[in-house]
Amino acid sequence: MTLKAAFIGLGAMGAPMAGHLKQHGLLYAVANRTQAKAEQLARELGVTAPATLAELAPQCDVIALCVTADADVLNTVEALAPHVRPGTIVIDHSTVDPETAKKAAARLKEVGAHFLDAPVSGGVEGAKNGKLSVMVGGDANVLERARPVLESYALRVTHLGDVGAGQATKAVNQVLVAGIAQAVCEGLALGEALGLDPERLIPTLGAGAAGNWFLEKRGATMLKNEFSVGFKLSLLHKDLGIVRGIAEKAGTSRSVVERSLADYAELMKQGHGDDDISGLIRLKRAH
Ligand code: NAD
Image (cartoon, rainbow, N blue to C red; front, side, top):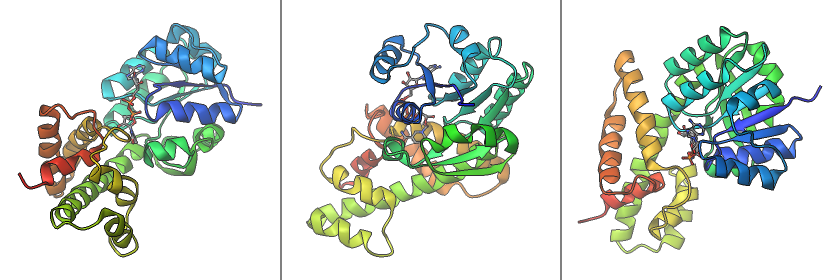
């Protein structure tokens, strides 16, 4: 039986993910906080955009979310819970606290529905070309039922443990993302100050031990002061706030996290919160 899926949260990540679900014949409906955005994408994809989640919920086997932050996930789950059919699977792709995932799972359990925390990595490019890495927490049998949905936009789907384990893995991922951004932005600001040619510098660095995704995808654009695509730095700031709490409890070092929180807070204060995280190079240049 083909699954009927809905996608809620149609931003930089969610809109292309919903597009992959449509291409795989699984998408039934879309929703977004701004209804006009949902209606526009629904028209493009030839699906429905119900006016309320009460209308959307009972019609779907799987409901995927990629919204902004913890309160958005919990409010969405609260709005869905009274209306989902028992057995419905809600999958959250947003980056939130593992405790939020546990609260969402508990609320859905009360109505006989299932929850998977399934944060993603791979950036807007990964969402567009269907090559995300999905980190899943929850029941393994539920994941197997939901797998066709996840595989429509994933290169890799990994089951990491019970509910919360996906978000715990994503927290580790975000420490690496923040540290790599610190290193690449600082290095390229130095390269620029030394007058090195970006067209030779970036591929040369990328071909050796310093090569990485962020350098390859964002190196050239940051040196052209193009920061409009990708991952909003206000979202990484939100993620690192979550990571700080987790690392505090674990008692591990937070030097990358604290430095990055301070830097992104400064950029947000300067009005650059919607820039890609490569906008960090602004703080690395000589002043
Ligand atoms: P975005 O700001 O582009 O999009 C978020 C979308 O969710 C918007 O369309 C917004 O209207 C909608 N939304 C927010 N709250 C909602 C609610 N309560 N109900 C319905 N719709 C709601 O953000 P994004 O870059 O797509 O990121 C979404 C999530 O995925 C975040 O948690 C982010 O941390 C995570 N993430 C982003 C990236 C990336 O590279 N952009 C990568 C991995 C994970």
